[in-house]
Image 1: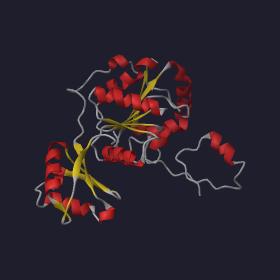
Image 2: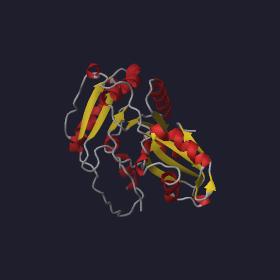
Image 3: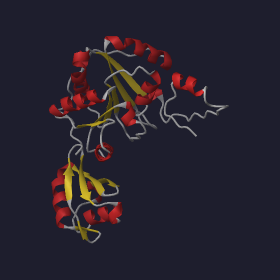
Image 4: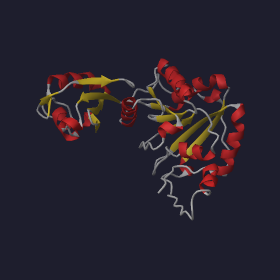
Length: 282
Protein backbone atom coordinates (compact mmCIF):
# COMPACT_ATOMS: atom_id res chain seq x y z
CA UNK A 1 0.00 0.00 0.00
CA UNK A 2 1.25 3.48 -0.92
CA UNK A 3 -0.23 6.61 0.66
CA UNK A 4 0.16 10.21 -0.52
CA UNK A 5 -1.55 13.48 0.36
CA UNK A 6 -0.92 14.69 -3.20
CA UNK A 7 -0.53 12.82 -6.48
CA UNK A 8 1.08 15.07 -9.10
CA UNK A 9 0.82 14.17 -12.78
CA UNK A 10 4.56 13.44 -13.00
CA UNK A 11 4.37 10.86 -10.22
CA UNK A 12 1.28 9.31 -11.79
CA UNK A 13 3.09 8.83 -15.11
CA UNK A 14 6.17 7.41 -13.39
CA UNK A 15 4.10 4.94 -11.38
CA UNK A 16 2.62 3.47 -14.56
CA UNK A 17 6.08 2.15 -15.46
CA UNK A 18 6.34 0.05 -12.30
CA UNK A 19 2.81 -0.79 -11.14
CA UNK A 20 0.72 -3.59 -12.58
CA UNK A 21 -3.03 -2.93 -12.56
CA UNK A 22 -2.96 -0.71 -9.44
CA UNK A 23 -6.19 0.22 -7.69
CA UNK A 24 -6.46 3.90 -6.75
CA UNK A 25 -8.60 4.95 -3.79
CA UNK A 26 -9.23 8.66 -3.22
CA UNK A 27 -10.47 9.79 0.19
CA UNK A 28 -12.88 12.71 0.23
CA UNK A 29 -11.33 15.90 1.60
CA UNK A 30 -12.24 17.05 5.10
CA UNK A 31 -12.87 20.57 3.89
CA UNK A 32 -14.90 22.42 1.33
CA UNK A 33 -13.11 24.88 -0.93
CA UNK A 34 -16.23 27.02 -0.75
CA UNK A 35 -15.60 27.64 2.95
CA UNK A 36 -12.09 28.93 2.34
CA UNK A 37 -11.81 32.61 1.46
CA UNK A 38 -8.76 33.17 -0.74
CA UNK A 39 -7.13 36.56 -1.21
CA UNK A 40 -4.22 37.33 -3.49
CA UNK A 41 -1.70 40.15 -3.18
CA UNK A 42 0.91 41.15 -5.74
CA UNK A 43 4.25 41.93 -4.09
CA UNK A 44 7.83 42.66 -5.05
CA UNK A 45 10.26 39.97 -3.95
CA UNK A 46 11.99 42.48 -1.68
CA UNK A 47 8.78 43.25 0.27
CA UNK A 48 7.49 39.69 0.61
CA UNK A 49 8.59 39.08 4.22
CA UNK A 50 7.32 42.45 5.43
CA UNK A 51 4.01 41.73 3.68
CA UNK A 52 3.51 38.69 5.93
CA UNK A 53 3.64 40.91 9.01
CA UNK A 54 1.09 43.23 7.37
CA UNK A 55 -1.26 40.28 6.83
CA UNK A 56 -0.88 39.12 10.43
CA UNK A 57 -1.44 42.62 11.83
CA UNK A 58 -4.53 43.14 9.68
CA UNK A 59 -6.32 39.78 9.92
CA UNK A 60 -4.95 38.80 13.39
CA UNK A 61 -5.46 35.02 13.04
CA UNK A 62 -5.15 33.18 16.36
CA UNK A 63 -3.16 30.47 14.59
CA UNK A 64 -1.68 30.34 11.11
CA UNK A 65 0.80 28.41 8.99
CA UNK A 66 3.02 30.43 6.65
CA UNK A 67 4.37 28.23 3.84
CA UNK A 68 7.76 28.99 2.28
CA UNK A 69 9.41 27.18 -0.62
CA UNK A 70 12.85 27.06 1.04
CA UNK A 71 14.20 26.47 4.55
CA UNK A 72 16.34 29.63 4.32
CA UNK A 73 13.24 31.71 3.74
CA UNK A 74 11.65 30.02 6.76
CA UNK A 75 14.56 31.16 8.91
CA UNK A 76 14.53 34.67 7.44
CA UNK A 77 10.78 35.10 7.93
CA UNK A 78 10.85 33.90 11.54
CA UNK A 79 13.64 36.38 12.28
CA UNK A 80 11.59 39.23 10.77
CA UNK A 81 8.39 38.27 12.61
CA UNK A 82 10.07 37.75 15.97
CA UNK A 83 11.82 41.12 15.66
CA UNK A 84 8.37 42.70 15.28
CA UNK A 85 6.98 40.93 18.33
CA UNK A 86 5.07 38.09 16.66
CA UNK A 87 5.11 34.63 18.21
CA UNK A 88 6.61 32.59 15.35
CA UNK A 89 8.57 29.35 15.04
CA UNK A 90 10.12 27.60 12.04
CA UNK A 91 9.66 24.01 10.91
CA UNK A 92 11.99 22.65 8.22
CA UNK A 93 13.90 19.50 7.40
CA UNK A 94 17.20 20.19 9.17
CA UNK A 95 15.71 20.48 12.66
CA UNK A 96 16.65 17.79 15.15
CA UNK A 97 13.76 15.59 16.31
CA UNK A 98 13.81 17.26 19.74
CA UNK A 99 13.54 20.72 18.17
CA UNK A 100 10.77 19.57 15.82
CA UNK A 101 8.81 18.07 18.73
CA UNK A 102 9.04 21.29 20.74
CA UNK A 103 7.93 23.43 17.80
CA UNK A 104 4.92 21.22 17.05
CA UNK A 105 3.89 20.97 20.70
CA UNK A 106 3.94 24.75 21.12
CA UNK A 107 1.96 25.39 17.95
CA UNK A 108 -0.63 22.71 18.61
CA UNK A 109 -1.22 23.79 22.23
CA UNK A 110 -1.61 27.48 21.31
CA UNK A 111 1.67 28.68 22.83
CA UNK A 112 2.80 29.87 19.39
CA UNK A 113 0.64 31.77 16.89
CA UNK A 114 2.58 31.39 13.62
CA UNK A 115 4.22 28.26 12.25
CA UNK A 116 6.57 29.02 9.34
CA UNK A 117 7.13 25.80 7.42
CA UNK A 118 8.26 24.15 4.22
CA UNK A 119 5.89 21.71 2.52
CA UNK A 120 8.08 18.69 3.26
CA UNK A 121 8.44 19.51 6.97
CA UNK A 122 4.71 20.16 7.35
CA UNK A 123 3.68 16.95 5.61
CA UNK A 124 1.31 14.91 7.75
CA UNK A 125 0.49 17.71 10.19
CA UNK A 126 -3.12 17.82 11.31
CA UNK A 127 -3.72 21.02 13.30
CA UNK A 128 -7.29 21.60 14.45
CA UNK A 129 -8.93 25.04 14.22
CA UNK A 130 -6.29 26.62 12.01
CA UNK A 131 -7.52 30.16 11.34
CA UNK A 132 -5.40 30.98 8.30
CA UNK A 133 -2.83 29.76 5.80
CA UNK A 134 -0.36 32.22 4.30
CA UNK A 135 1.42 31.27 1.09
CA UNK A 136 4.59 33.33 1.32
CA UNK A 137 5.60 31.88 -2.05
CA UNK A 138 3.34 30.42 -4.70
CA UNK A 139 4.11 26.74 -5.13
CA UNK A 140 4.67 25.70 -8.76
CA UNK A 141 2.56 22.57 -8.10
CA UNK A 142 -1.17 23.40 -8.17
CA UNK A 143 -2.12 20.31 -6.16
CA UNK A 144 0.31 21.31 -3.41
CA UNK A 145 -1.48 24.67 -3.27
CA UNK A 146 -4.81 22.91 -2.73
CA UNK A 147 -3.24 20.78 -0.02
CA UNK A 148 -1.75 23.85 1.69
CA UNK A 149 -4.96 25.84 1.90
CA UNK A 150 -6.95 22.74 2.84
CA UNK A 151 -5.39 22.89 6.31
CA UNK A 152 -7.77 25.74 7.15
CA UNK A 153 -11.56 25.61 6.93
CA UNK A 154 -11.84 22.05 8.25
CA UNK A 155 -15.22 20.59 9.12
CA UNK A 156 -17.84 23.32 9.56
CA UNK A 157 -15.27 26.07 10.17
CA UNK A 158 -14.54 28.85 7.71
CA UNK A 159 -10.98 29.26 6.50
CA UNK A 160 -8.76 32.03 5.19
CA UNK A 161 -5.96 31.59 2.64
CA UNK A 162 -3.71 34.59 1.94
CA UNK A 163 -1.38 34.44 -1.05
CA UNK A 164 1.63 36.64 -1.86
CA UNK A 165 2.60 36.66 -5.53
CA UNK A 166 5.52 38.21 -7.41
CA UNK A 167 5.43 38.84 -11.16
CA UNK A 168 7.47 35.74 -11.98
CA UNK A 169 4.90 33.56 -10.17
CA UNK A 170 1.88 34.65 -12.22
CA UNK A 171 2.15 31.56 -14.42
CA UNK A 172 1.72 29.32 -11.38
CA UNK A 173 -1.33 31.35 -10.32
CA UNK A 174 -2.88 30.69 -13.73
CA UNK A 175 -2.46 26.93 -13.27
CA UNK A 176 -4.11 27.14 -9.85
CA UNK A 177 -7.04 29.07 -11.33
CA UNK A 178 -7.52 26.36 -13.96
CA UNK A 179 -7.46 23.61 -11.32
CA UNK A 180 -9.89 25.46 -9.05
CA UNK A 181 -12.14 26.56 -11.88
CA UNK A 182 -12.35 30.19 -10.78
CA UNK A 183 -10.45 33.46 -11.04
CA UNK A 184 -8.33 34.76 -8.17
CA UNK A 185 -9.59 37.61 -5.97
CA UNK A 186 -6.88 40.30 -5.89
CA UNK A 187 -6.45 43.02 -3.27
CA UNK A 188 -3.81 45.76 -2.91
CA UNK A 189 -1.35 45.63 -0.01
CA UNK A 190 -2.34 49.21 0.77
CA UNK A 191 -5.69 47.89 2.06
CA UNK A 192 -3.89 46.19 4.96
CA UNK A 193 -3.94 48.21 8.17
CA UNK A 194 -3.29 47.03 11.75
CA UNK A 195 -6.56 46.21 13.52
CA UNK A 196 -5.26 45.79 17.08
CA UNK A 197 -2.77 47.19 19.56
CA UNK A 198 0.26 45.17 18.51
CA UNK A 199 0.94 41.52 17.64
CA UNK A 200 -1.50 38.94 18.97
CA UNK A 201 -0.13 37.25 22.10
CA UNK A 202 -0.71 33.47 22.33
CA UNK A 203 -3.09 32.58 25.17
CA UNK A 204 -0.97 29.69 26.44
CA UNK A 205 2.64 29.01 27.45
CA UNK A 206 4.46 25.66 27.43
CA UNK A 207 6.14 24.13 30.49
CA UNK A 208 8.57 21.24 30.08
CA UNK A 209 8.80 18.66 32.86
CA UNK A 210 11.94 16.52 32.76
CA UNK A 211 10.46 13.04 32.78
CA UNK A 212 8.01 11.21 30.56
CA UNK A 213 6.86 7.72 29.63
CA UNK A 214 10.22 6.30 30.69
CA UNK A 215 9.41 7.43 34.23
CA UNK A 216 5.82 6.14 33.81
CA UNK A 217 4.38 9.66 33.97
CA UNK A 218 0.90 10.02 32.51
CA UNK A 219 -1.09 13.12 31.57
CA UNK A 220 -3.49 12.43 34.42
CA UNK A 221 -0.62 12.44 36.92
CA UNK A 222 0.44 15.93 35.84
CA UNK A 223 -3.11 17.30 35.76
CA UNK A 224 -3.79 15.81 39.19
CA UNK A 225 -0.68 17.43 40.66
CA UNK A 226 -1.48 20.84 39.18
CA UNK A 227 -5.14 20.86 40.22
CA UNK A 228 -4.48 19.23 43.59
CA UNK A 229 -1.95 20.52 46.09
CA UNK A 230 -0.57 23.10 43.64
CA UNK A 231 -3.92 24.88 43.56
CA UNK A 232 -4.56 25.51 39.87
CA UNK A 233 -7.94 25.02 38.18
CA UNK A 234 -8.63 22.61 35.32
CA UNK A 235 -9.52 25.57 33.10
CA UNK A 236 -6.01 27.00 33.51
CA UNK A 237 -4.40 23.88 32.06
CA UNK A 238 -4.38 23.03 28.35
CA UNK A 239 -2.93 20.14 26.37
CA UNK A 240 -0.51 17.75 28.06
CA UNK A 241 1.91 15.85 25.80
CA UNK A 242 3.88 12.99 27.36
CA UNK A 243 6.95 11.99 25.34
CA UNK A 244 9.59 9.37 26.11
CA UNK A 245 11.76 11.55 28.33
CA UNK A 246 9.82 14.83 28.67
CA UNK A 247 6.31 16.05 29.37
CA UNK A 248 4.97 19.30 27.90
CA UNK A 249 2.11 21.14 29.60
CA UNK A 250 0.22 24.12 28.20
CA UNK A 251 -0.98 26.58 30.83
CA UNK A 252 -2.53 30.02 30.65
CA UNK A 253 0.29 32.45 29.89
CA UNK A 254 -0.37 34.63 32.93
CA UNK A 255 0.34 31.81 35.41
CA UNK A 256 3.32 30.19 33.65
CA UNK A 257 5.95 31.44 36.12
CA UNK A 258 3.82 30.25 39.06
CA UNK A 259 3.40 26.82 37.52
CA UNK A 260 7.15 26.41 37.03
CA UNK A 261 7.82 27.47 40.62
CA UNK A 262 5.23 25.14 42.15
CA UNK A 263 6.26 22.18 40.01
CA UNK A 264 9.89 22.59 41.04
CA UNK A 265 8.86 22.80 44.69
CA UNK A 266 6.22 20.05 44.52
CA UNK A 267 5.80 16.48 43.37
CA UNK A 268 4.28 14.61 40.45
CA UNK A 269 3.28 11.02 41.11
CA UNK A 270 5.01 11.26 44.48
CA UNK A 271 8.36 12.27 42.97
CA UNK A 272 10.22 15.57 42.75
CA UNK A 273 10.50 16.95 39.20
CA UNK A 274 12.33 19.68 37.36
CA UNK A 275 10.32 22.08 35.21
CA UNK A 276 11.09 25.04 32.98
CA UNK A 277 9.39 27.42 30.58
CA UNK A 278 9.91 26.53 26.91
CA UNK A 279 10.47 29.47 24.60
CA UNK A 280 11.07 28.64 20.95
CA UNK A 281 12.98 25.62 19.65
CA UNK A 282 15.77 24.83 22.10
